[in-house]
Amino acid sequence: MKVSIIIDEKYTEPFAEIYTASVTDEISEAARQISAAGNPSLFMLSAWKGDFVTLLKPADVMWIYSSCKKVFAETGTDRYELKYRLYEIEEMMSNAAFSKYIRISNTDIINFDFVHNFDMSLSGTICVNFRNRKRAFVSRRYVPKIKERLGI
Image (cartoon, rainbow, N blue to C red):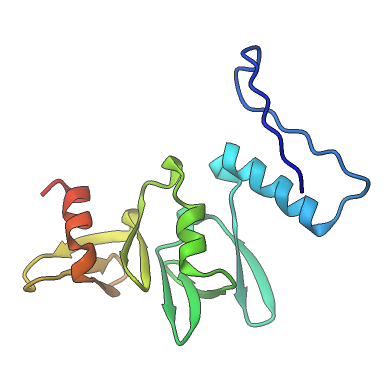
């Protein structure tokens, strides 16, 4: 797919047009991603529960983690399988609008809105306690990043 960016001061906000002979899945996905980038409230994660696909708003996702070579998203009440890799999700959520998400280990990304507290009593690591009483652990490699984010 060819892409060109034209800088013109008459446009106060970005504007995108896609020229194509027909609408394919690739074109539809590109249009969805462009729209989501400009409006974070439109961004959704395709999540699987059995044979059903649900669109999750990132604000509803408490925790994204990998286990047994699969990636899962947990809301406060349900668990869904994602067909993305963690690094892809992290890239999608690197936008400033998703600043409440942070990677805490090679296998976990958390949403600060669902965190009850951070247990700092463990030597060399941090335990993340969620509001629904679930827990995740910050790996030693990510401890400085979390401390910086918490301002400590």
